[in-house]
Length: 247
Image 1 (cartoon, rainbow, N blue to C red):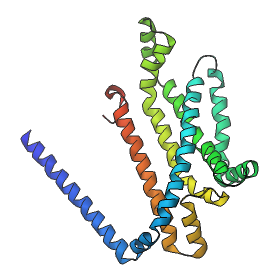
Image 2: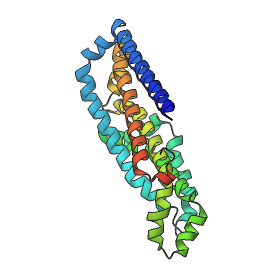
Image 3: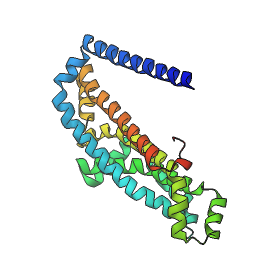
Image 4: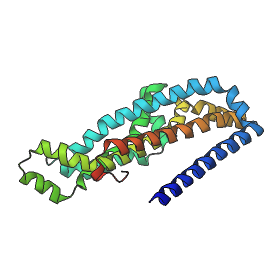
């Protein structure tokens, strides 16, 4: 046992050393290629537009979660269960229509600025949340539900104590997918006056400025990774160990 612990610790040290070496190599390459100085020169724009980007994602994704999870739950309840598949097909229209078309429709209805951008991102984020919420609750084993009924639990108690804890991992997976779509789509908000890091990306493309384009693309990618990491940690620590594959 002691040998295994020492071996694991040694591997951990090698892994951390390799990671530090990779970070140093990437930093050296970024500086030598002139990318890092460009990023530093554009830092004020990155910080300002990055804040706008985060606000777009937070508002639109927050609205999608607040509506999508309760809607998915409602469509699994007996009075509305028969409408579940039809509702998913309807929401699938928002995912099927190209994002630029959704942005154009939003702009024609709501004008130019943050509002149409938030609405378009909200529509793009809604489907995975609703569909995964429904799928997670539907996948709860019947024997658990029958056992809960046999113990005399009410419908509300069964939902909070049996259905939701067992479905939470799948629900989180839908939220992860929605956030990934949202963060990656948010740069397009610049095209309708919504701001965000897309301003650097599209301005760099238009001006043929590779550094400016990467000043928007790299923070967008890092933001997507950070959001995904945050949701994974929520999955790890808010789901009961017995039904959590991450623990």
